[in-house]
Amino acid sequence: MPNTDWTKLNSLQIGKYAEYFAKMEFASYGLEVYTTEVDDRGIDFIIKNKNGHFCEIQVKSLRGTGYVFMQKSKFDITNKNLYLALLIFNNGEMPDVFLIPAQVWEVPNEIFVDRNYGNPGQTSKPEWGINISKKNYSILEIFKFEEAIKNFVKEEYI
Image (cartoon, rainbow, N blue to C red):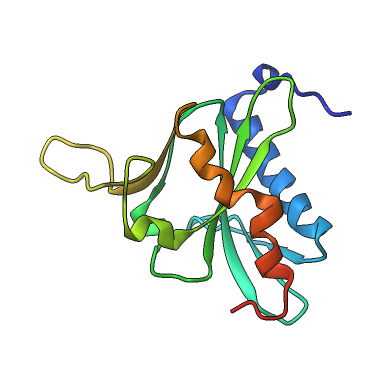
């Protein structure tokens, strides 16, 4: 049984753990996983199903509740083959894994937010974000990995 005291890992370690964990989740369903050599476009890896259909995956991790984001320049929500693998780490448990299509940000709301920074005095770049709280956690259930992955494995995907 792996360590589940996530406080023992720094932010770089938890991010790397999340990426490896996500790759293994996809591989466990028989999908091929291709790692990018350089992560300069925000894509952590690519998956391919048995019919040759590809999807790009960006991985983000979060301890408990809070906010995570993707720079708009590296997360094109018009790309129907782009997904966010979100791993949420709660101490004493294996991570919750969610697979979220980029298109959910086409209609931003209180959870899936659109932040258009770039005004004078703002140093942050425009981003797509997710607000995770105990109150809205249940809304993520529709993106649980175990359910969302079924579309990748089926022949009618894409």
